[in-house]
Length: 422
Ligand code: GTP
Image (cartoon, rainbow, N blue to C red; front, side, top):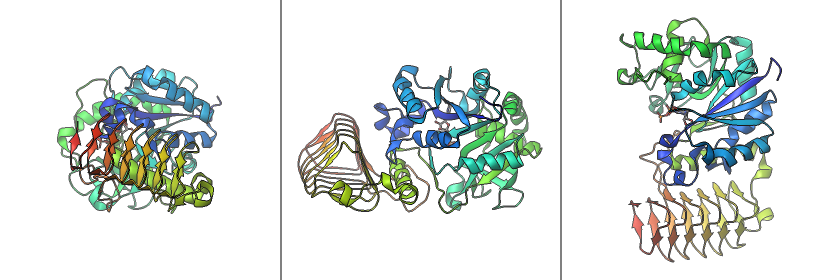
């Protein structure tokens, strides 16, 4: 590896971070759940691969090695990059793993570290971000930032720059502030000078000390007592901004074609998928299904795996992913949904705003739907009511399931509304 190359780390968390993805995360670790027709972190890996300067990607998390082994090997082959999973001894926070594994991560003496959250959907303009970092802030940390609605901003890390609404030096960083700070937020993608990582424990110490004075973060979140746990946002970014040394910058996602959304819950996977479909429509239309190619009625943006079978009289879309081996029967209607591997949707069934788990079966004339409130831009778990089936759920014919979560291997013979079926 040359001195000018980069290493990348994708933070994938562990089982505790997958709880908002239940029941789907019971069968597949959340970072590998399909979003936009591909495993969630394949979008990050694809963007890193296309940079051409990243020869090694590390996934940092708290899943058992055995659970991820095959998935990681497959990704490495697909993207022709070295992909290594490093399991933290405990959940070390968003920066603790970087310190713990720094000898391994920086063995090749890379010029920069690209750090990405695994649970975001984004156009990942990494080339622009890396260039911006090299030109403006090569010895510091550059955050990728994006604007969100003012009403959503308090749920994120809020950034105040020298000149608000423009890229530049960060003056103030407040993680999940209680008052309005800024609607320019931390999008969970960074370029970092590797030399800074050894200073992270000092930043944490500094943050501990200054937490006693009034700052705009929530005091109850301020101090982490676990010695090895370091939170990148609160311990490192807040401290760097407060130290005011000028080595914290933000690159703002501003291009028309860029998008960003958090993907925390199963419901948000539907919204995030739609973002990717719309992006493909502009950038890679060949990935999308068409009525002519797929010989059924396609509405809007849809991805259908080549091994799925869709009856010519079925109507699919908008916003749908049909995975490998799924069968969509005559007269069926599917919109705004994710239909996973080997699902069978029988004749005239109707599916809308739903995720249908692996090997499930939907009876004839059944109706499975959610009623989310997707009017806001960033997902909100409690308002986004989509129907989710775990794996192997079967509905009889003419059953109506609305706004419900059904755990794996349930047989449904009656209508279900607003329930969690254990
Ligand atoms: P909420 O607090 O849930 O609103 O999330 P957040 O947006 O503040 O992000 P969070 O810090 O929980 O996670 C950001 C990313 O880091 C996600 O991809 C997580 O899976 C990952 N992550 C969180 N904690 C850890 C950790 O202890 N270790 C590792 N390796 N990854 C983590």
